[in-house]
Length: 474
Image (tube, rainbow, N blue to C red; front, side):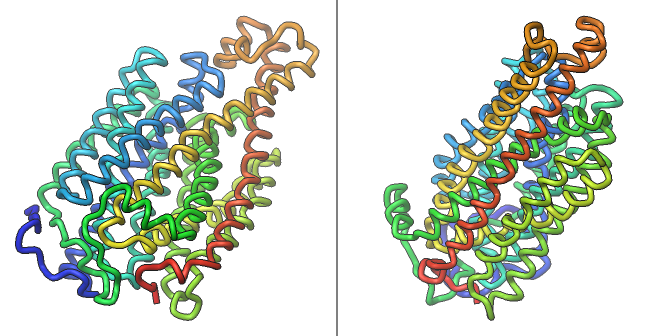
């Protein structure tokens, strides 16, 4: 039964975990399941990218707008107001309504008759998904004491990678057997049921309950006061910029990865989903969990491990990705990209641990919302769009350099291979497909280099982390 603690609220700042161990783990599992569904519905559009591009004859920048900016704009705009509600209102109810909303919008994507309607429904998905993470992070901080939060948040963030895996496991085969429309319908409906179950089984915890008695206790704060509190926390802002850069690259990569292997290696959507995307998603999940586990184990001896570990991992993943996207061998590409995925996704738990670690209990949901506002607007909103624009530019350059430079344009080169051959003939169709594949290949290679900058920023966080933390991880 869902219980609010608005009246008769138990003592806060106890330094103890809230609830029994079994129930606490159930709540964490439930939040992780919802976050998995969150990313399943979010990532699905990248799995079915090529069929959508071909059906609506979209340029890559248009798909980047659809998959990235169209979603992220409203996600970021409504995220902070919803987080403000989460500072005062029942967070469990906010999460349940959010889950039901985004699941309904995901299902409606399957009936979109054109690009405009698909964009509208994607905006609806973004509005719904904005309500989960700020409230969920705040609840986790009240269920788990500081020393246990790195692992708890790392488990929660497994939803990012597991959701991506499941989007490929189900989305790829469903699309190949039926169409991309059925994939949206099949994967959107279950969330409505899960939202209701969460509402009636999860208890709202007292705010600040798991923080130690020595932690700073802050009264209810306004948005302006929260920003003033964070303004002196350099670690918060550096972490936010670093995470935004990782998201900028990561979301661009995830939205075009399946399309790349279809274009460059001639694989079917189901084969890419199951043979490439699923193993990479599992490797990413391992990387996120392993980094969280190592952070918890090492934090007593190395207090700054939460910052320098993901920083080093991000820098190390860059050459692995370079090899993976430039080789003509699919087995080699998969091998090195498995290593790259483990290294890349080690930052997931760290970004939230640092974000909420430097914010006081009453400001955490808003701090996470501000963090996500920037990360998602710059990362999710601009990353796919940037990569799509760069892909179109490089494709155009390849067409200009071809023997058909006066006849072919990126727009003329849109459609299935069968349609291109039928309309343009074999030689011109091949020129189109090669230009499209190579344009996307090098757009990805250039973009993943940004990971090294993000890694350097995480290393820089070590300078101010201990000074800015509200409650020490050790």
